[in-house]
Image (cartoon, rainbow, N blue to C red; front, side, top):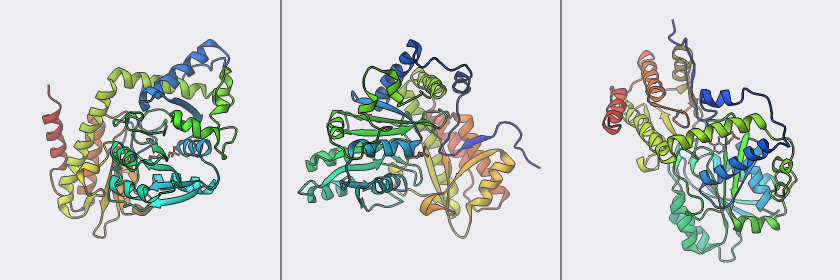
Amino acid sequence: MTVRAGREFLAIPGPTTMPDAVLQAMHRPALDIYSEQMINLTESLLRDLSKLFATRGKSYIYIANGHGAWEAVISNVLSRGDRVLVLESGRFAIGWGEAARAMGADVEVLKGDWRRAVQPAEVEARLRADKTHSIKAIMVAQVDTASGVWNDIEAIGKAIKAAGHPALYMVDTVASLGCMPFAMDDWGIDVAMSGSQKGLMTPPGLGFVAANDRAIEVHKKAGLRTPYWDWSEREGSEHYRRYCGTAPVHLLFALRQAIDMIYEEGLENAYRRHRLLGEAVRRAVAVWAEGQVLGFNIADAAERSDTVTTVTMGNGHDPAPLLRYCKEKCGVVIGVGIGDLQGKAFRIAHMGHVNAPMVLGTLGSIEVGLNALDIPHGKGGMEAAIEWLGESVTP
Ligand SMILES: *Cc1c(COP(=O)(O)O)cnc(C)c1O
């Protein structure tokens, strides 16, 4: 017996649920890529991406996933042998650093922890010790989708400034842009990157990069530039060059619709919605944790992301049967633990096109699974989530 008929819900941290309007926006013929319509579409998106990143700097759109956008950043601002400082707090900044190493950079990892955020004071101390300014760039993820951590990018920016270090500050916002506040210029960020398929509710396949003037200056002398990623190649009046070839027309239609929806809701409202729904998930997990099997991966409540919650599972329990139950019996797909947390955790995504029924349905299904599989857990997680939303979402 199952109760899964109906639409399967993806509660994994990417790709996420796409609004019907986004899917429908693609159901039309391609554009003449030399038409004014095409040029206007591109220009509107580049403008709005810079607005989302909150920068007066330039934005670039790549036909790529997040890994591609990482490579775009590395290629445009680094030279062989340049030292990069990677701020560890899970899997993703490390992955970005590994790409930089493979491309010829000299990568140093500022040791962090899978259970806590990057500590700005440790960043400052490392930079102060770099008297010769051998570090050329700093890489960090705002939200690490593996650990579920939220890094205080503003505070890290202040630490870099306090150290008086000139390294480029580069931030991965793949799992946070459009969902949690981000202010590239105000926080002193030089390069930011993101992708289409998480908070931005668009099919996978678009990578975004924003760069300020300082980054563009460094770019001019960067040695790792290659034609596809190259910012300079994408400048000029010829629209065709913006994508170094044919534009991903349908993905752009989808992105246009998604960004319109974000601005229709209001960016601040979208942030608030994510905070409320994220907290609803945390309220439920906190109660479940009383059973001594489930717990938060991120120890400090203030460091937990509003877009994804990583739940550890211990005491000899394997998350796989629970995830299988949720998918096969209830029709909700929960994220697996990855990296160091493989087989030891699961991840509940709450980013992008999510609302109360999606999140409560997900939490309720997990609770059904916990009961059905006799996995010890504190009773009343759902009630706690419901109570929180009832108190916070006032009439
Ligand atoms: C998903 C993710 C990536 C990688 O994006 P892909 O599109 O899967 O290549 C990078 N960084 C973060 C923080 C992510 O969540």
